[in-house]
Structures are given as structure tokens and as C-alpha cells.
Image 1 (cartoon, rainbow, N blue to C red):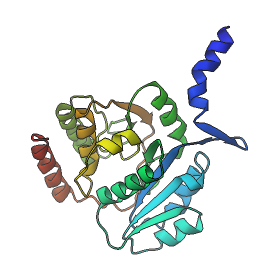
Image 2: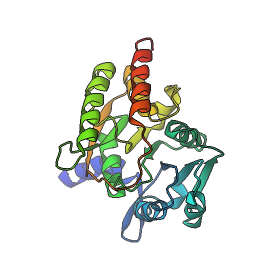
Image 3: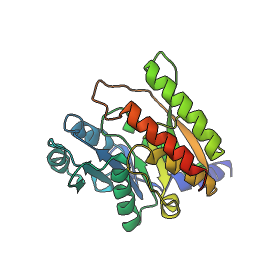
Image 4: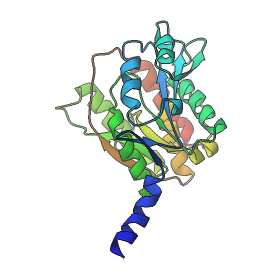
Length: 247
């Protein structure tokens, strides 16, 4: 009887997977990859993702890249949705969200194109989603040994602020590695266009009663170019916090 009980508890998790060779493949889950000038990393990311997710359940949103991001992603066998010009990460995510809703996915995982997120944690997100949480944040260990000082400071400060404004504990507000239930995407109305969309989603989903939890992931920092403008994007964050007082 004990074995039967364990099988029943595992069934909801195992039903989210299908087997391909020796790998567990996630079902009913769309991986959204917002990408801008990611030609140097996109092929490697898709290869790593394909160990956990069928390529038919991945979508690259090319946000007006000027390199061969689209060509390489399509060559790797993944659908690409293209913006004619660069609109911002927020708009790229929204394009992916609309596609997920249209195609009746149950959840999405967002993952950055620069290889700073390890796809090997995808099964952890799926397993955690069965226990608790409507939004799961890939939370990195936050210390000065593995995080640049400026990034550590801004991440810590923004996480504290968003925790206050959302009413839930947010440990890594700047992580773009997230699992999001599509029921959240159907209810949350997002207005931001750039990096400020990510904190907007956290605050609005929390205020609608959705639960936000952590999935602990490894910390990886590459030498790739960052498109974050510290001055401009900090200004956008401050404006977002101000506007959120009237949501």
C-alpha cells in the first residue's frame, strides 16, 4: 500500500513528461527565448534545451536582431517569431506569452538567450510547480563570490523593493529564468515594454493572489554584452514602482 500511495503522489508530475531515449521530456510547456543579437549563443542554448523539451515546444522571439540569430535558430529546428525592429525584452516576452495562450499551453518557461541560465533546471521547475507556486523564479545564490558588485547591489535592492510592493518574499527579482502558469498570463495585463516588464509581472500577479516561489539555480555570468542601460532602466524601474501605487 505504501508503494501505491507513492505512485499516486508522483503521477501528477510524471504525467507532465514523455520519454525520449533516456531523457524526460516536458509536455504542455512552452519555452520562450527572447533574443537580441544572440547568434553566438542561440544554437548552444537550443541544443541544451532539447535534452529536456521538444523543439516543437520552444519559440525564439527575435527582437529585431542585426545578426544571424533568426537563421541559426531556424536551422536548429525552432520556430522564430520576429520583430521588425528592436522593441525591448518586455515586448519580446509579451509576443511569446500571446503565442503560448493561443496554442493552449499550460505554462511557459522564460530563459535568456545568453547561456546564463542552465536548462538542466527545467525538471526542477516542473516538479516545484506541482507543489506550490503560480510563478516560479530561478533564484541564484546572491553573494560577492559569484556576482559582480554592481549586479549584487541592484539585485538586492530591487528584490527588497519588489517584495514590499508585492507583499511576497522575492529573492531574485532580476532573474529572467521563470516558470509562469498560463492562467497568470491570461489575467495579468502587462504594459511595460522593456526590462521593467519582469517586475511588473511579479507585482501584478501577486496582487491578484497568485503565489510566487523560488527554484534555486546555479549562478552563471558570461562575458557577453549586456543591453541593460543602468541609468535608463533604473529610471524605468522607479517609474514602475510609482505607477504601481495606483494599480
